[in-house]
Amino acid sequence: MLDPLQHRPDVQQLGVTPFGDRLAAAFAERGHLCVGIDPHPWLLEAWELPDDARGVRDFGLRAVEAAAGQACAIKPQVAFFERHGATGYSALEAVLAEARDAGLIVIADAKRGDVGSTVEAYGRAWLSIGSPLEADAMTVSAYQGAGSLDAVRALATAQGKGLFVLAATSNPESFGLQQAIVPGTGETVAAAIAHEVSGWNHARIPGSFGLVLGATVELGAYGIDPHRLAGTPVLAPGFGHQGARFSDIRRLFGPLADTALVSVSRSVLQVGPERLAEAVRRHSAEVSECLA
Ligand SMILES: O=C(O)c1cc(=O)[nH]c(=O)n1[C@@H]1O[C@H](COP(=O)(O)O)[C@@H](O)[C@H]1O
Image (cartoon, rainbow, N blue to C red; front, side, top):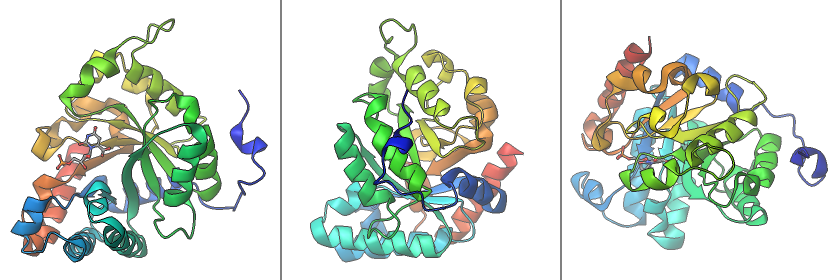
């Protein structure tokens, strides 16, 4: 297959540090916890914040403050900001900038997917250096075919950014679709995506192209062998509120646990702003113990 990078003169090589290298350094410095920033209306109320753009901004900034220096990454769920229109986006810009200044790995949970040229435009929004919404990585969907991500992959490489591609997601409604067999391959949809994305890393450990693998699922049910994917970054939601436990990380992910971002949103955010920093510290220590 053509390497999309070599055929895109408009995608400049900027001499940036690859996302995978920055992720490895962050794992070594601060462990594997990823704090999701999901300002649900009920959480805003519990935090005594208004359900408007100012509320989600303050919520996000306080979450960043609590995560700084203690968590590996933060993952704002952009839907909760988008709800508030242009002012919500402005709030998200402030949260992203603050988190990047704090040295956190920032993952925009935007779950974008479309025809290739459109996904590339999403990439320009979230992954371009200097963009108002600049993050270190974003979540994307390969539902329109893994090839639809070629251009955004080239863009991410050039900008030193990463992608997390949905493979085996944590929500039960997805199981049938993601366990369906791709004709002519014998592989499940999830396994086919996982193997394709893992190959994009050309054996770099960790690479810059990761997978979303829910902690609520058994990878064996998808025909996914974690040993075959070792070194691929994993975004693993489903802990806490959705029922998965940190003590199961190794059992669930085997060698992939070493490159996993263990993501929690509601279960840590619900302690409230005053106790959040302490809760992040505790969660982070617990994750490290489970990975030791
Ligand atoms: O990409 C994600 O982060 C994601 C993928 C998935 O399979 N399941 C999943 O829950 N998520 C996101 O992870 C977060 C989970 O939140 P909690 O269940 O509160 O920890 C939400 O922002 C979801 O949108």
